[in-house]
Picture (tube, rainbow, N blue to C red):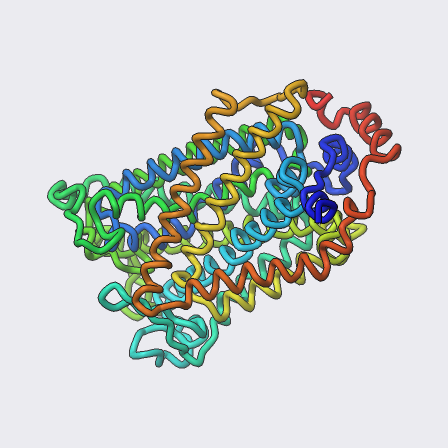
Length: 543
């Protein structure tokens, strides 16, 4: 039993991890701007175009601005820990690899499985929101989809998931619609194709998309300021209803936990460390820069949105569009013969284009990050070799990208955003706490290592990060328990089933195929690779 336990906590050598980073076959083509753009591309998406209205109307009211601040602070602390670790270990496995070097193999597997939940499921749920904006945009142009018959709602069959979430008096049920979201699945397929072509091309497309959606949101803020009615901000913190997480400070904290989903993108920056030109410098800039930019934009958009529309009227999957319609910007109308109304509104059209492109970039970055985590797990023998097979021309893990794309597309076709939103945020918060714990381990175990970037406050800041992340994780887990007391066990079943699948995969495959478990650790080839890589200037700061 002692040997078995020792086997489970077997750690990968830090020098082995650095050696793998030095001789990675992935192409180093991303600079600080690309990485910051990658983070902004992942963060500004579903959180601002979908979740903002839901949180304001059901949880925090105008105080959603405080929810964004709280979530941003928690992510900033975790982001500092990510920045330190990525400056030491510039690998594409991100938190999975950090855990392998600090907590051992089981800790690494748990982290990897949490990242599957964070990236793969998040990408599929974002695709559902993307399909809704696509349909809305097409309808405004006079393009209709067939079979608009789902429960009397103006929601096309081809853009409606199989499972729907219906809330009534604080109780949520999940009826089947008999349809599937083909539009969302197509969106994931297009993103997968782009990632197979190459990361340089994907990054270039993402840069363009990020510029478009940032310009769109800044336009929304600039136009909306003059339409704000300060009366809509009173009461700023609505009185609690008595139900957990509904207004008051309980609602603000619950809102922070839900909004946490919107911030997962910054973690994707660290997964790109193996493809960064100067990871010890560029990755910290990308992580912290994207967090600061997005938090400020989130707060400004939330302020305009709740100032223009009373918070109770923002319960819409497209709250930004609701705010634009409430402004009644007739001065932006222009005649168009093919439009159903005979005219189009330039600002409304711009916002919907921004939403479509914004959610597109989120899908791109989340799918990208997921493939890189699986790439590293496969290289370590914990997953089949197909996930680490590199295309000789594009130098991307193309087989794994396609396989994951198929799975994520299927999830997008059958699952609604609200069903797994809490699970994604829960998994993300736990993953972030493990990263903070890894910083503490590295500071205590390897104090001699040079750290191009250091967390201010050291282990104390990392400890605070663990406490904050676990607190937000509880804010997501508590509603699942509350729902279970009312007879709705589906969220608990989903979480338990997901964890059980992860345990079975590790027991029947990962445990027996782990390279580290077979005694394969640092080799002469690794040491020579580090020397050669440094000689060619991969990153002098890592010496």
